[in-house]
Image (tube, rainbow, N blue to C red; front, side, top):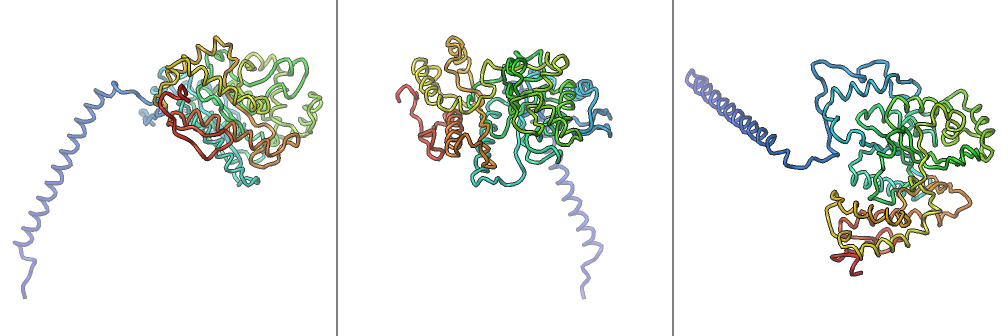
Length: 427
């Protein structure tokens, strides 16, 4: 019987194995050298290419053992535990992550929105929420904003309209790089996809909300502002405001008492529960010295507009925009979605026209309740549904046009048509 395990065979096998590993090491070594050369060349030529503002990742998680506020065991994302010295904490974090301190730091915006975690009661509610969400994603993509959409109760006792405050508070901690947190209700749609927030206008303020000062301070109305859309700066002042505001919420042992106080303060408030909008109005009215100087009540454009006032104007606005485009060729020129050079021309024209034909920036479907279907009885569901469909398609046309299509009809969400060259000059 032959024995395969002879010294010669063992030596021959060892030689083959050694030769194999030698070839592998040479291959890996050559690959690493090649990659090093490619990376070196890329680092030399890459400044010639544009960088995308939405891709801003910092992988420097640990700088020689440096710590930041995330390492503090007592710091909490939850709303019931206050955070102190937030401005210093953010400043320290920026020092550890210098890539976020580039130009445009003060313009960095995080859009936050959300809805319930369970399926909608309204049979088409989930579809409508998806369309509203798509609208927000479209706007965020076009303008380089990040977006966080939350569909869980981060504080189970803070339900309904109060659920936004825990989400905003957590977002401030999760995104220290964001200068502004922009809350937009799930039933609000961007209807001017070109318009960008005039952040320079708010440089001396920490909170922006749509409303009318006279209604708050003179009429003492809880509808003097609308808390469905607002902009809040990521700073200690805002942390303190959220803490004071949340004390009126359903997680507070003083919740029922606050309901009585708010109803007594605002005579036009016709329901007993403490709500977020009345709570904010109360802080403006009763604690103006503490909060008022840093809150900007915007009324010069539709920071958020009531859908009933807007929906019947959309056809006329579309026609007026077409009339202008037919006169100014640069506004008809096709371009990539990320290139928005013609917006400056639009702004110059609209300023001359005193903004009388401007598209409404945000259209808010207050009272329509697309998810639950429990709409305000002063409207019909058909009126609400058609209005939502019309506004969403009005906005979608502005997006689809960059892709060469538009909806045939603002009440027809399914069908689109391709656009001819130099549209709308030949339509």
